[in-house]
Image (cartoon, rainbow, N blue to C red):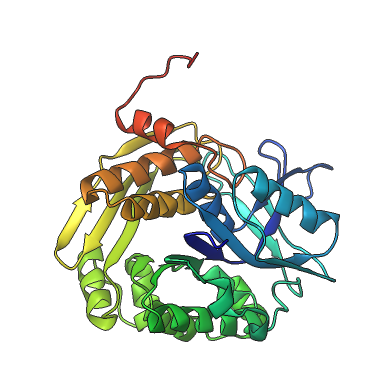
Length: 332
């Protein structure tokens, strides 16, 4: 049986240096599962939604471990293909003070990056699905995934499916195969109904000068008639572990803004944007007000900053408690 929501993207292994060590400084790593779309899928499953992951993995114990990890979090895995080849991985060194965290990709020639667009029959994979989510990282992984991503976006537009797209421009990945990232992402965004983008993404995709956020978002709504909702965050940083965060939802009628959260002692911000996106999608699917949605999504992202790894392992109840500033006493 198909789920109500499908997420399409590469599944990854993440290797993180211990503490704040730099890559090459130590001799061990902590391993987590990840991938932008998988992060969203896990959050949506935690929030009670029926969600399938669509991807391709290596037919080996590493690929099997990721599938098991997704299943453990309630994500459907029947639409993940296993083939001979290698998994994509990335390495993370966690920054400190004013030294930012750094990611090094090792994803070239992975099973997913070498996927052919014909490997994904969207009419059969999306039967019964009402919402599809994908990020701009997926088409950046290679020409095959880029063609598959464009076909997916077109399928959603042609069949009046809600299509959620997170801009996520990754220049290093596009350079590997000399893909025209802005042009491809612009084509995909034209099919989206929900977008997680900001003024920098819009300037890149539309080849326009830098503008303030509201002006840029007005420009995006004018350029993409199918687009109904844009959501994004504003982050302030005094150091790597001391930050502020607020969320915004834009429609063609106006903007709704969350309260600003103070994040002191950030544990892991990787996946924070995916946690925000999942919070917005959860609330839109549940027909919540925009006031509620932006507060929920921002609180969900705040919680993610306290959890090691890519996945935001939290529940609706915990997020709502954070929205109400439920205090820091031990939960018993």
